[in-house]
Image (tube, rainbow, N blue to C red; front, side):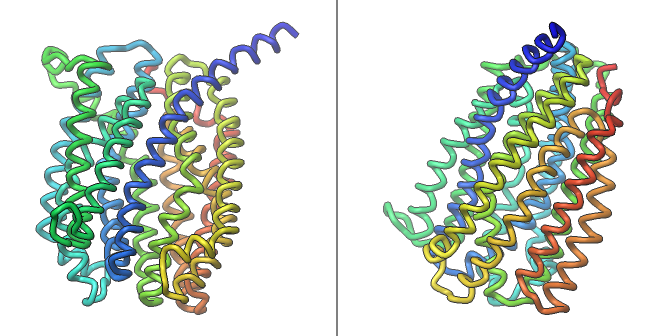
Amino acid sequence: MKSLKKSVSSVRPLRAQLFHLTSPIFFETLLLMLTGATDVFMLGRFSDDAVAASGVVNQLVFLICLVYMITTLGTSVLCAQYLGAKQQKNVSQVIGVSLLLNLIMGLVVSAGMYYFAPQLLHMMGLKENLFDYALPYMGLVGGSSVFLAVVMTLGAILRSHNKAYYPMWVAFIINVINVVGNYWLIFGHGGFPRLGIVGAGISTMACRFVAVVLLTYILFTRVAVVPPLRYFKPFPWDKIKNLLIVGLPAAGENLSYDLSQLVITYCTVLLGAASLTARTYIMHIVMFSYVFAIAIGHGASITIGHLVGRARNRAAFSLEKYSIRWALAVSLVMSLLTAIFGKQIFGLLSANPEVIRLGILVLWVDVVLEIGRAVNITAVNSLIASGDVLFPFWTGVIVMWGVATLLSYVLGVWLEWGLVGIWLAMALDELIRAAVFEHRWHSRKWQNKAFTR
């Protein structure tokens, strides 16, 4: 009886720590989603073609972000485990190495997205009538992705130090800047010219730069010191190795998902402009259904990383199950509310009857999809935090491509079920992966994979 009481009392502080992290991560994620959604919704008042073009460009940008996630995901896991094990020198080395790597990668990728924008958009099968919208937007948003690379790394470092409220406040500031910038530059208010989609791109670029400045200042004045040069003589190549051991398969799982979504976007292009526009709106609407799952997944990842660093595997096991329950409950409620009010939501976004009809139907299918997605987000974050990074990667490659991608073409294009068929394929993919990942966690094969041993 005493041991049971002790176990319960030890779990309660962990749950409090989890929600202490989850709350600011939730609001940060929500604000960042609002930044992207603001572009879409405000561009919708400018032109449906601009919305469709921005959707294709942002799909490419999300794909490129996975290059940066190689370092970012490794940074989050290693910092969390080293902090849990109280290995401060290792923490400082990871901070320095990860910032340097993502800065270099960001410069290379940004240059590539700027100079090869036409080729990349042609590869996506973009219609010629959308090129005038997509090309300048791609140059601005893709060409400034180096700022995004640094922001992602800084945010990961701060969250791993349990300072998630700093990225949250920065996200709030840039969200305000983005709304004002869009209002001025898209529609030509405040003495600025009416720039349309170019204005949205300029506003996004400015927001990223402001975020870099603020997060850099916060990290090195309030949370950590600038890593001393002596920590890098000799250069800590083992930290780069560990970053890649974690980051490559972890980012690979995300890369598999985004490449799969890229092919699904191409399938949607084949269905016509109405389906592409509806999909762009839907992708931004449903984000609000799984934003809490993202937040609690990241919070669980950091907390589980600290626990694994302290060799508290039993507590880590229990915390993942607790996180899953919350992620499922909130995602299900939010997706149901979104489906119930789908007609009103789409009525505010588009005047195209076909776009509205498709949107309402797909939002009901998405209720099923969000059940699987909530489990996947939380379980994958937990497995990666423990050091079990290869299993999510291989599972993602096999199931995403064998189910979501293949069946999207079969159901959506070949059988002519359209956008509803595509969403059914994606829902089945999420549910299968959810079952596999939970089985993996309950098998406890993730234990003894920590980097602090």
